[in-house]
Amino acid sequence: MAKELAEKLPNVRLHVFSDRDLQPKRAQIEAALAGADVFFGSLLFDFDQVEWLKSRVEKIPLRLVFESALELMSATQIGTFQVHMYCFAFCEVCIQRSAWPVLL
Image: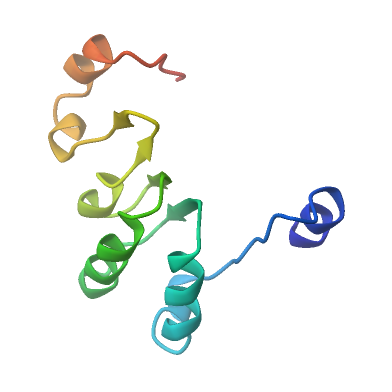
């Protein structure tokens, strides 16, 4: 996918890391996050990793985090739409009050 993206959009850089990379490649990940415009995260549950990531991704304008620790999923933001931790407990209420369309 990264190769195809580079061919079609040469000005876009895609960095792919796994949760196993967070310790040995921490400096690389931090540099990638510092210059990122978009963050996609999934399956992140380790408390220390979540805390480290959360403080760094909150500066990124577009953040999509799913199937992860609630503390990190609450960092999801698309424009003015934000996910809050209490939304996961009261999904129906949040969906009804959301200004964004919900795709299920």
